[in-house]
Image (tube, rainbow, N blue to C red; front, side, top):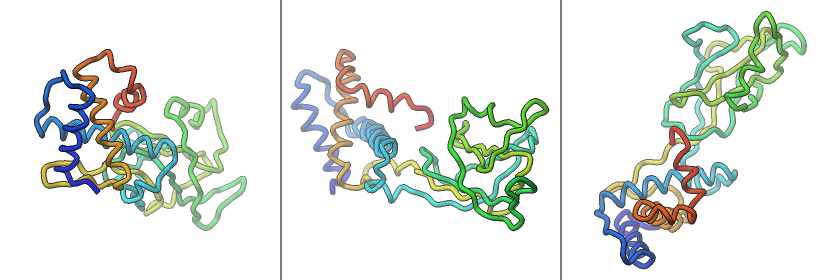
Length: 219
């Protein structure tokens, strides 16, 4: 496991080797790059479904859904307590009045959708979808929006169970990287790639994936 000091030193050695003509970086600047790289590597693990190296960042949270400001009865909101950066799974405690009724509140698994598809699941006078499993999507401000149908009622208290990835603690002076040590070398390498791009934009092609992850909102 690398300490913060060792990660800074490894960055300095690696950057000097690959970019002899590049500018030097102060420790505080290196920490900024290391934290950007840490988020990138965590999201890469999450996106590929490899959770084994980031299990200490997984939060299991039980909470209560709330009504949105517009009081739309088949849409509900949930905001995680920790700084949310990625969805893993969720369940909702519900009853159903008809069509596969659930008379005693039970947990059902939610289906994750893209926000752009949410309009297909809205209940209104022109559309009456049947959603045996609620739909959930990631909304702004790290909030999750749940969509149910007209036959479903949420339990009303501790009715939403969410498994998600929280943002890792920032690497700082005296604060070591908290992700699994197997990712430390990759974090340093990605930080070096970011530093090279800052100095020489022509090197962007060497780290396209890092660039795409850097542009992901709310990382």
